[in-house]
Image 1 (tube, rainbow, N blue to C red):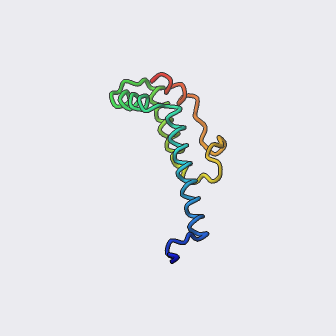
Image 2: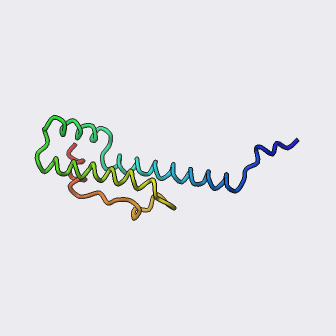
Image 3: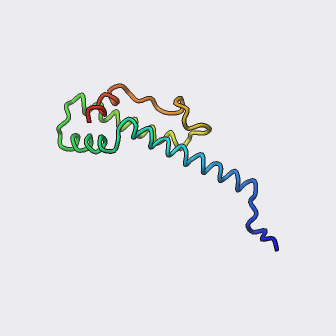
Length: 103
């Protein structure tokens, strides 16, 4: 006997493809952020900022890091197609890259 309740419709396939694309984009988002600032660096920056141990320029770069990570997290939600395409992601500001290398 055929169980028609288990039939996969074109809509089901499209929904699964869309969900798979979203998972791939989210994973790429995490990879990009961690490539710039591994979790240990992120925690060190948070601690230094909270303790007031950052210089003025470092604090400015840290705020830019927060803006960049926010933009990167927002980007994965709207990316369509290949999430590996660099043009679809915010560019890492130079002060952010310099700061994260120090932490």
